[in-house]
Amino acid sequence: MGAVSVAPTAYTLSSGAAAAVASNLRCLAAHENAEPPRFVRNDDRWLRTPVQTGRFEQRGTYCVNMPQNGCADALDPNQAGQGSQWVVDGVDGNTLIAGPGTPIQVNNGARSYGLVYVNDDGSVTALDPGYAGDMYPTTKTCWASVHASQDFKLG
Image (tube, rainbow, N blue to C red):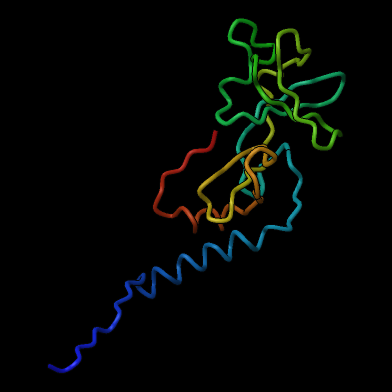
């Protein structure tokens, strides 16, 4: 009997799908070193979502909960909800977690737009990148290309 050889088989994405995946990853990676403002009053080209605002010791604060429905206390909507997370203006790396009696005055109706951070493949989003590992800002057009087939709602 003669020797029988079997060629290995490799299954890959179609060239179009592979190109789309590579393009999406390049798009997200291109914004890794970008430093747009974290919170703005008006929407811009960056991927953002409306966030609840407030005041803490005369400084502006921004709720970074996703979704935003726990930012204000259900019984006293002028106070921060217990366990809600707030970034304080002018204090780098300061995420304040509201507890009983935390003096955060919620600005009902007043909102800003918070920068949404995404991971390398776009599968994780957060308003506070400190808790989720390597997260980066991205533009709306890049996000749309990554999630073109999904109906994604932030907040």
